[in-house]
Image 1 (tube, rainbow, N blue to C red):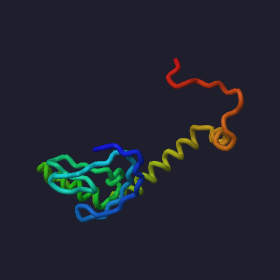
Image 2: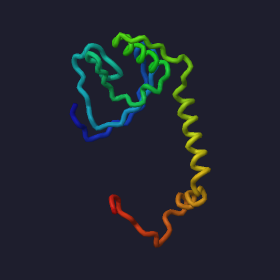
Image 3: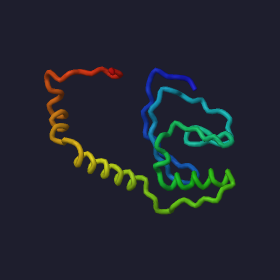
Image 4: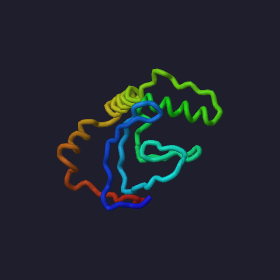
Amino acid sequence: VRFAAAKTLARPVGEALGERVEGYEIHHGVADVSGGDEGFLDGCRVGSVWGTHWHGSLESDGFRRAFLRRVAKAAGRAFVPAPDTSFAALREEQLDRLGDLIEEHADTDALLRLIEDGVPDGLPFIPPGAP
C-alpha cells in the first residue's frame, strides 16, 4: 500500500460470490494487489484473510449471506443465514429509535436554535481534555 495525495472517494458497485454488492471507498492509500488466492472487491483473499477498500459491502444483504456461508464453510461450521434480514430496514429501525430517544430526552427546541442561529454569544468555551 502506498499513499496518494488525492483522496479516493467512490461508490463502487459490482458482483462477488455470485451476488450484487455495493460499497463506498474513502482513503488515501492505493493498494497494489498481486498474488493472493483469489480476487475480492478490488482486493484479494489470502487464506482466511479477506482484504478490500469497499467499506459497507456487508450492508448488501445477498452478498453478506453468501460471504457468511463461505466463511462458515471454510471454518467447517454449519451456518444458515436468516433469509429475510434486511440491513436497510434494521438501520432505519435503529435510527427511528434514536430519533424517538432524542425527542423524548433532549431539548429539541434548543438544539434547533443552535443549528439555525449558532452558539449564543458569551457561552464559555471548554477545550477538549479540560478537567
